[in-house]
Length: 318
Image (cartoon, rainbow, N blue to C red; front, side, top):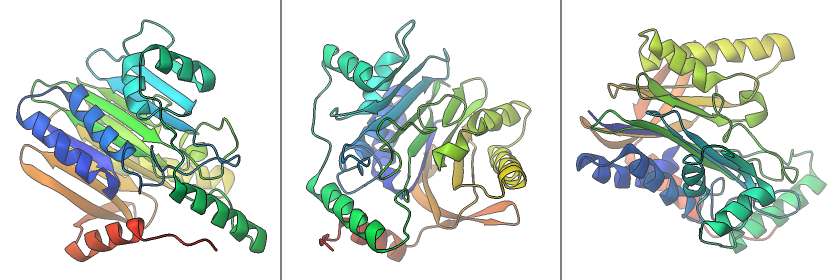
């Protein structure tokens, strides 16, 4: 059995490329890196990679992580600038005996030394978003920090190897150097080939208040199906945050076990995810939470068309 699952509709094209690798008996590491890079390279997705929205100083700072479920090797970068595919840098770091999580200038020096592609990641489209947001903030009480969609994935290959990976540009208009949950093991991602893996998307500052990805893997280790594991972990943590803090930020988790069974849970409306397995063609689903239970519905052709139309529509200066 093989399979791959990812947060958000934006992952679909990457999932389709990964499916081809997995069908041919390819490696889960190669498949997941290929899938994440596809998202990082698409300029119309404004929360990941090229075209990602900038921080308050109009710089694009990227976070990414990679984990090997066979060896538990982890690599991650945070607040890295001007490199095309941070997930590839994270995977390279996972092979190092130490210095596995590098940030800012240190991450950039490592990437340059290793020959990774330098690239100006700030697009003209992202500049327009930035200038428009500055005007909106000045004219209204709009918070600058809206928009934080991480691409997170879990992959299983036909040899039983599992991997997890994340990539994001983080909060729009964030403080320079801000890091969310995406490169943090146990919070933004976790995978163990003996059990399964999970990955998160949402408001990193709240997701980091718990090790939700690890908790889902722990529950799966007890024999709980990924769907129930996701629902339990999200519901419990959402409730805990509300009891202690009065509110809980956006939080959505995806998971897959070592049998290729998958699960998804969210505390928001309109969460989408993409999945493909040996028995399921690549597809996008929409999830809604109904009393702690999450219901998944296949995205309609109309929804899919509208998704791409709105994301590629021309932008105008306000």
